[in-house]
Length: 537
Length: 76
Image (cartoon, rainbow over all chains, first blue to last red; front, side, top):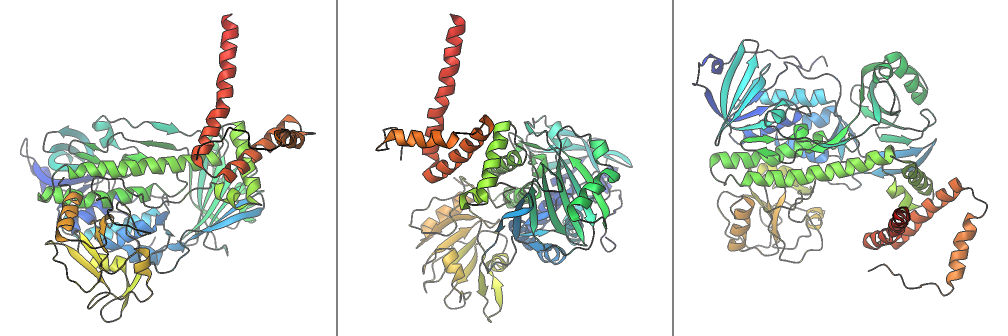
């Protein structure tokens, strides 16, 4: 961590010098400088919004915590200008193996096809991700990041919120048109708005240890049911940068956390797993988890994102990644509403889309957890049957659930225009844009996701050229594939991934999700789809 | 497709017999293991979630009937 800045100083801000009712007014205050809050602030800043970002600490949290960042998250970070740095540092992986006892049951590849800019996943310690995000924040004058600013009071009004903030210099107040709570699972903002956060608590305990060692294991996700080194329970091994390995061991429900966490008790377990004890501990944490979400992600002018709004079990990498999807979903909507080019109702689609995604993530991760830690004798029996059938049958392998890894949700949303043409494939409205390799004007290799960034931060039309030049609504970015001056799709992958024929046109939202698609769009159909996607309906 | 509850075997006794014989010589625990595997294999063969759910509902009515009978007996 030598080259990574993780400690930051508190600095007094002139907002703190204001007295009484003369509070400073800001458009957006984001609370919590974790991956979600930082990414949201950057996205908003890149759209020209001034953002005050508050964090109660003055340093980046220790321990690896989240480690798996998805393709979708990397594509988002590419738009924020830091995707490459994450990938350069991260450990790229796409293969997972599942073992039962001492033999391999099966393996899966999360990205079996070529022609994507980003891999299925990288593993990267959360503190690196946060440090790189902070570096990017510091390049953006629109963001005012204030460390050791702890929100202690929240006063809602019809069109703004007044926050009371505690600092080393004492408290001050400031007003914001919108406040976004990205302050984690124990969100104090959530408590201040009085929102419930109910859900399922899992009794099983898991031990996470990050150990440092040099090992020749491949960069794959290895999961064991009932391994010889940890009888009757499950284990996970996963590589991170800097020769750090994440080990996750399921413990007895009744294990004493204080005892289990002691390095002298953890060490022999891991030595049995690795077959040696030449490793050092970086981080040990014992946890139980909960699956729950807020009923409403929007409380007047206070909006919630990430763990503050929803929590899942860690199997499936759905925590940080879903929080980042929240951020990319919210940023463009909040920007348009603040600029007055979309009605405030557009924000409601954030709740609709992301609460449904949270439900999906909770459903998936609950199923994984129940499979790993059966709740009854009969559940254990069914699992035993699946594991045993998996040795001989394909359907058995597919039923083994050792975590279904995060993929972006497909939104059922009022922003989408339903298909009216006939499609055999391609992303349907509400799905995120698939990537594909293309070549630029001078033949330089690039990807559709690069072209999307090049097309600007607004709505974008992806057109598969048919030689005609349709009249386009104003202010729309365009990506032309094929034709004169268009991107070359020599491998035909863009066309096949979008089920494209000459004239096929996709309307992409600023977050890269499909809003509408047409075989032969007219100005009128495009205008209508654009209005709907922007919340004017 | 709906769950078929008409008789599908030419010789239903043969089918019933085959299942009975599979359990011969097994203790309760082993029998339950066998049934669990059999249910999963047959469910996959059917490959239709709606049909599976109908079958589960039909089977689960036995539990309901049993508990109702018990209640009635207690009331008497």
